Length: 324
Image 1 (cartoon, rainbow, N blue to C red):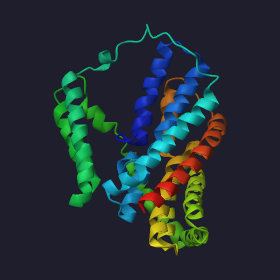
Image 2: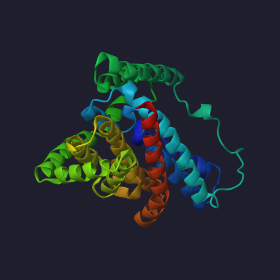
Image 3: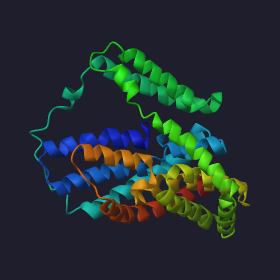
């Protein structure tokens, strides 16, 4: 999730987890437990870098948060979110997970590499991409420039590979997400014109008057609640505008911007419509014959997300107090 974003992590890991569970001959309860865990972790640990979630990119761009500054603030918070997520997942699914498994039927991971040349080159490109991301703060370049250059570089490397169908790859890319994101901007500014952001700004100002804990935790909870019912993309934009209008000090203002990210990254786990990544994840599962009902998803999501959200927001408050 850190490098491939929550969407990429969920879409890459879910088929792998499913196929591994099938190879291990796990029962349906254990399979669902592992699948739910992979999807949950992909979202709750998409905090550390600007590029780890589209929500992060939008918020960092709006508040002019540099790549390194963002990472300094959110990497420790993300580690807390990871620990809390693993804890609640274990407590919830401990009876569904077998005590031991037989790995004799599993194929060697090396067998999955179809083109060693492309595989090795991809790791080099990813390493350079990470360096570029951190350099973006000092060069004052958008991270999209480095991501685009890396994508073009990988296409050039892979174009002669017989196992990488470039035309199909480009054709099947989720281009609709670009249109979706642009549409969300239109929706958000429409809501701003009818006064929603002003109302939220008043609420956030009131929370801020009760101190940093109330301001940070309150902002995150509001963001999470809105994300669960109206999707996290419009929510992060609406809340960003509201935070901008909130009458709070500069330190709390910045902390609220990060709390908005936490709420919009974790809040979508309450409902399937909270993020596009979850809808894509459910679609991938359905293609493999695994049906996760909305009722089951919401029951698990609410149970797991509430403690992780609160612990993560408190960690953000504590770490913000340390680094200022």
